[in-house]
Length: 340
Ligand code: TXA
Ligand code: MG
Image 1: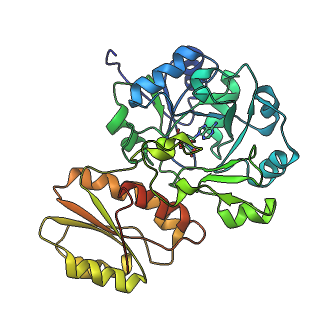
Image 2: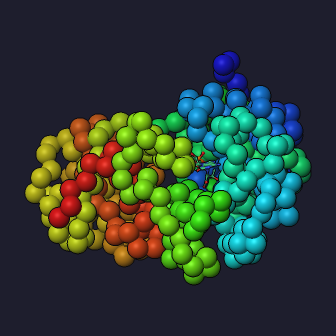
C-alpha cells in the first residue's frame, strides 16, 4: 500500500466525506461509540482495502452503517418485527442488529456468512455522509487489528495516518465502547457483544436474551464463536494486563500490595492516591459506569506511550454498562483475571 496524505475534515465537510466513500476510498468516521474505518459496503475492492489498512483477518465480518431503519429492507431478508421494535427504541444509537442478508451484500463484508450486522449510529455528520453517498458504509473500529479502539480522531490517526484518504473529526466519542451486537436470527435473540445498549435494556424490549459464551470467557483458537471477531486477542496494549475483580476498595488495595517497580495501574478516581508517582490512568469515580466506558480505551492506549512492564486494572462489576467495560478489559488481559 502506498502512503497517502490523510485529509482532516470537519463536521461541515459532508460533501467531501461522501465523495471519498463514493470514489471507493477509506474514510475515518466519528460515531457515538468509537471512530470507524468506513468504505462503500457495496464495493468489494473498497471493503478489501479496509481489511488491508487494519491488518484484519479475512474471516472477521464487517457491519453496515445506515442513516435510518428504512434502509434495512435494501440489504436484509426475512426481517422480524423485533428488528423494527429495537430500531424504534434504540436507533440512532449503539446497537448492531444481526439479520439475514440479501444477495446484494458482498461476501467481502460478511466473510461469507448468510447474515449481516446493521447499525444506525447516533452521529449526525456520519448519517448525513452515508445518506449523501447513498450507499451503506461498512466500518470496523478504526484501530489497527488487535489494538484498543480509537475514541478520538487523534487516536485513530496514530494507527491510520497515511493509510486512509480522510478522517472527519467530531471530537471525543460520547459512549466510548463499541455497539452492542444482538443476533435476531437466533431464538431467543442472542447477545454477541455487550456495548452501549445494556443487556438489561435489551431484555426490557425482547424478553429472553441469551448471552454468547464468548462474552464472558476466552475462546480457544479452534472454537467458532458466533461473532467471529470475539476469538481474537483484542483491545490490547503492548504490556500484559492483569484484571483484579472484586469490591473496589479491596481490589485497589490488592493492586497496591502487589505492584512492582515499572508496573502501571488503571484504577477508579477514588484510589489514585494509593498509586502516587506510578504510571496511573484513572477511569472515573467508582460508580460512574458511563465514565468508565468513555475512558477505558484511552487508558489502555496511554500505556503504549509509557514504559511499563505490566498493567494492573481494576474493573467495574458486570451490571449495566459495566458488562461492556469488563468484557473489553478481560479481553485486553487475555482473560488473565484475579478474582478476590
Ligand atoms: O460501535 C461499533 O460497532 C463500531 C463503530 C465503528 O460502528 N464498529 C465496530 O466494528 O466495532 P468491528 O468490526 O470492530 O466489530 C464488529 C464485530 C466483530 O466482532 C464481528 O465479528 C462482528 O461484529 N460481526 C460482524 N458481522 C457479523 C455477523 N454477520 N454475525 C456475527 N458477528 C458479526
Ligand atoms: Mg473492532
